[in-house]
Length: 522
Image (cartoon, rainbow, N blue to C red):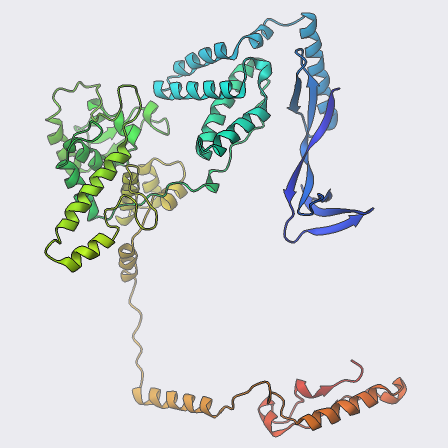
């Protein structure tokens, strides 16, 4: 039977939860939408049930399968939506369907082929289209979706959770799959406005431990480039090409895929200044943006290009793609070149055993340092942005050169400052004024201050009260005797004890210390 209900979810009780009891049941007072509501506490006592803001409809389609869709916050509007869905089901059963309804009875794989052609027509890169197509196909197969009526959001959530539990997907990859299939389902349902996956949301990627990168120090960069230049080919990329690849990555901030798309047409040496750009299809922001080149980098690029006379104007400068279309392992290049640079650095101290031992114990030029931070290929982009900050470039200009949409990403994620940089910044502050102290007066004051503390008696629990135990007992006895008298005979005067010699510091006897106050009425 069709129904209109709200989805009930449970959440953890806040630490300062206000629990009330009504008719033998516990409720927690929660402020939702500016008003206080009472939500029932679960049997375990650690969570509470909370209804969804929207109403949901549940009905059977023409194939007898239960369907669940989100409605509106207004119940009457949601009831009308349910009636409209039931009318559509009856029309399909009776054969009174619109021509577009045949569109939904076709296999999903046929729709997927048309969706792929649609993405290619939008001038998306072939690699991106193939990756999206493969992700959707894998998800449809894993969830058992063959036709439009089979699509179930709960099954999508479950399948993605299974892949994460099996360590096949990380949260970021899971979100990529979800975004791909949501785009596909939205494209199919655009004719009727239906989208059964519209309510699914990506997971928070900040909850998982992602790879943290670091920026190499300024003296480590030349060692890395020299090791690559003199090293053998790695991943089918020669040492000379790797050295130029590292230089270009560090002085432009380009990502690996962007560098893989660069050809001779991307370089403009005749402009003022000389620039480099990548096609919008290969840029992460899908924008064609030119980056000015450093004059020394222009000179090195021109010399290096003289060895690339066999390359056509549209062929990539760097062999970073495999024949199948995938990217070569640039992280492996960095790791092996760093290992070679580190070995050379350690070998330089072969005549000094103590220095050699110190270098071997350090993490200088290590692929992963002692704090677990990596110096992979993408770390070259971190070096570029960190160097902008060290050069005194403002945040807005650094964001523009890094081609980030958010300045927080530029300054908080990609900018790394070393202790030497912080020390330089502190040294640049104005010097504090010098203090002119009289040494004799200072010594006399210090001696007097120490002498005062030397005269103070040490206090413990035994001598916190100056009066004897006999005096205390007598005072308590008199107070009890007065307290037992009738109220009219007690009087309202406040008696105080005489100030002893030890209490002279409390005011010279001009006031009664708190320890002497005896108020019978309290």
